[in-house]
Length: 190
Image 1 (cartoon, helix red, strand yellow):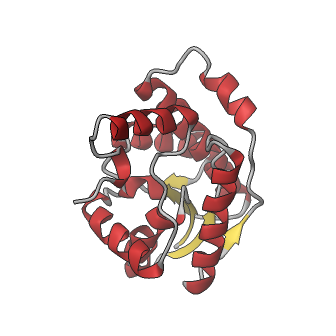
Image 2: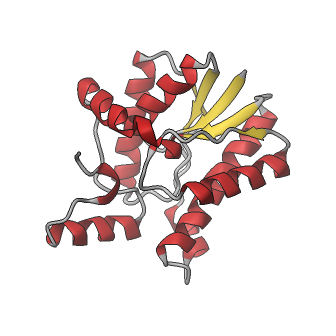
């Protein structure tokens, strides 16, 4: 099966790619994350992914799209975490589904599924909606048990590991958690 994999970052792709390849899925990746702020962070995540994809023979398609202004307009007035996350996930999965359908892929999925800090029900709902809209299968797989493996693999590979999900709101939330001396969300050490 040919599947297009939305990739949020190289560390999340490590165990995700490994898991799908064990099922003999032929993967192609796409980096589409216009929510990531600031631009330097967006670029650093993409460059880390480019380097890593080269070491594991993962083809990547498309040119990274960065339009934080458009993304902020989409979430304006919807800054509550669950609401803005849905908007963000919807946009990324719709884009991936559209590209998958146009490119003749049988299915699409996302590396967001490896994170225990992502809203899996929202991912599943938005993936299914995008699938029905574009006529390509969304493959939901609960990869949270592989999260620790993703951390270990990203360390072994020396990958840049960010400290927040990506948007300006999650950056602020992570900074406030650090100030309070609490673990910082999705990259919390076990």
